[in-house]
Length: 225
Image (cartoon, rainbow, N blue to C red):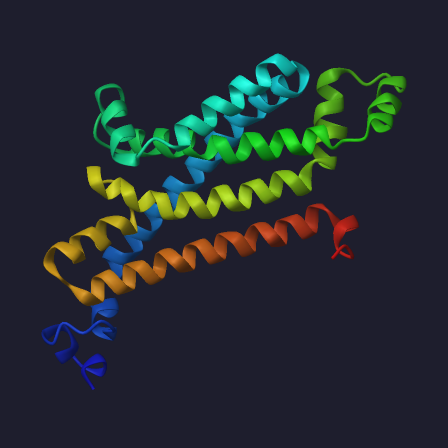
């Protein structure tokens, strides 16, 4: 069989063990870049979404504008967004991370806001009665209670970001997307399929990791269907 010998490379087979064996370092480097771009973008998006959600919860007049702007950003085609950012961030990781961070906002802001709005008023009143200030109540009462909604948003944002990282190949910084685009350009079947499978695997692993994290951080929900 072609996939069981060096002939699979000569035959340009879709499934080729020798490709994985001979290009292991290249695959590892692309996978590492893909993971780094995803993690940095999602973390940056969360750190930016948190104050936006808190402000939107506190000031109702800002809510529509914040949600509208983040949604509008998500509708911008990636190529157009990259073109807008390149003059300011250059061709490289900064442009990809900035774009992916902006794309994640529409999901993260909405879920953070939904979680904060779902915190029972009587719980907030009890915390105030115990002398909790705004910051202490946010980090020790409201955010823990909003965790299910927050983690749901992080799951969607992370899986979405894993797929969007591949678009960074348009400017040469796309992790596994670089291999996919190069493979399509040269019609290298094994490279296209292997990089695509790894990208899907990353999304699945990230999603399962966040599900596990959610079960650990919210033990009171383990019995909820």
